Image (cartoon, rainbow, N blue to C red; front, side):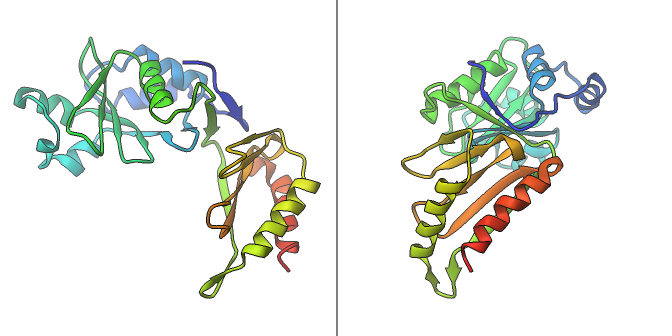
Length: 232
């Protein structure tokens, strides 16, 4: 895994916080997963792979009666059912750590019955890097103090696309940014000063999303107000 571009302030997990996670399962969690949490904490890669608070009951609660969705030997079902869900994807895949020394990570795909198995957490991230065609251009968006504002351009049954385009132009002319992703499609403008980004929905021209971290709220408020003022 290549080191990702970091957005905002990350919050690596402490030893005590990781021990709280290990206490929820009866098997040792992989070192590569521990090291990832100690380095980055919780967050998302490119808004497509979400590493969230682990849930030891997720698979059992939601798929206890539906394990036939995937090709799995009956003897292995208890291992998977007792797995620790550590991440999900925008497409509905479930990533879990299980009690297996050789392949302690599995992916339960949303659109396939073939379970995928991996030896390290880095291999899981590399798999999605390839699947989603990130081409190694990964960014990690921390969940630490995460807040979001959604500004809509929908006015009754209509969408004011002309206003959306005007606001977008004004934003580019007046607001400095640190980096941009998907510039030609759905641009996401990174602003490290507020620990987040401004996302323009260029396809539907219906909304602007502004993500920031609460400790940088004064900076975010200025940008939110900038957008709203130009909609008046």
